[in-house]
Image (cartoon, rainbow, N blue to C red; front, side, top):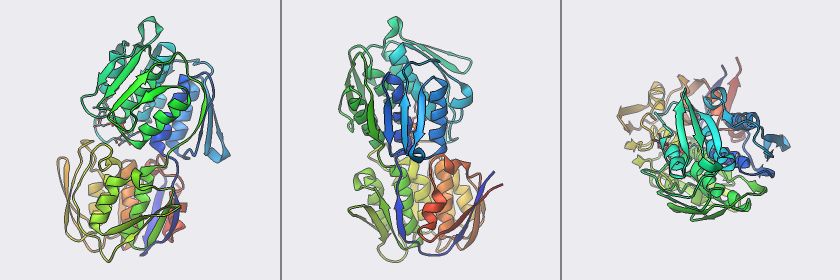
Length: 422
Ligand code: UD1
């Protein structure tokens, strides 16, 4: 298994191009199953999760061509040859459940294995299933698979009131509703930029959708959708991660393609911690206002709140801040697995349930640490860049799920980082 060696060496400066959003691309790709005509995505990120979704779509009979070094995904599902999403692929990635809505909506039946993914809590799919049931689907859970059927071959519009906000359930229900008979109203829907991006793409395909970016989505079902070409929105989590590089190491980094509206709540916390962020013509420029950063308290929430996917990286920063910060994780119940690893690097962290108390130290120290999930792994890289001495991060396959060309992007800012292939 590969590891990454980092030598902490002070301030880092330069420009970092930000890729298209992994999480947007993972919901835009299954949208190809809604139409007989081609769907082309541009600005796609080059990640192992995208390769997994490609494999899954191909197993269902879709054609997926990766063009221009993976930046363009040309997809086409003239017909769905196989309606079963197999355990062997689905277990690798939770987002695989997003093929259920489109297949069920287009052909009236689908069988999908219950998903796997990062080990950051129980992460059931009950909300997805509740939405399909409200739209008239008969569901049967057998042998680890969801067997779904729409009576008469077509879902019907319904009012779905989600008990709490779920990004995936909103996406799955939104895609399904585009081809349902009648009107669907999704209440307490997620408002993430990736959902806005999905709604825009579906509209280009001929879907009738109102309210994206608000907590109520209204969808008027249509009989068929056409093809489209759509650019994937900028990855706000990759953006936020690289914005933390000058915050934790010093220096100045410009993140190309970044916009303030993608990272509003995160920027507020950076500002309070003593980090300056300015919008330029090309992106966001970030540097420390002066000296050491200050402690801030953080609570993770659905968008537009502080994203759970930036909590681990923010914790790495706060490990070196002046004072004590409290981080409260409200989205996932088991998302502090990076804390013991950061502690190996000299951080002072106490975890009690969903809350972590972090007392900043002037300098972290290099150590051997282990990546446990995608965002946890990158928080260890950030900490390592700022630490004194060498750090070896093992199990870096997690990183390849969400960060393309990480070492290259960081080296361009002066980082000493290399992959050790084993
Ligand atoms: C998506 C993102 C993930 C991000 C998360 C929250 C993708 C591919 N992944 O994940 O990176 O961390 O949003 O911003 O877009 N839940 C249920 N039942 C359900 C669905 C969810 O109990 O049917 C719970 C989850 O366990 C979790 C919470 O709801 O505690 C939010 O999960 P959700 O918003 O659905 O996250 P994902 O769509 O899986």
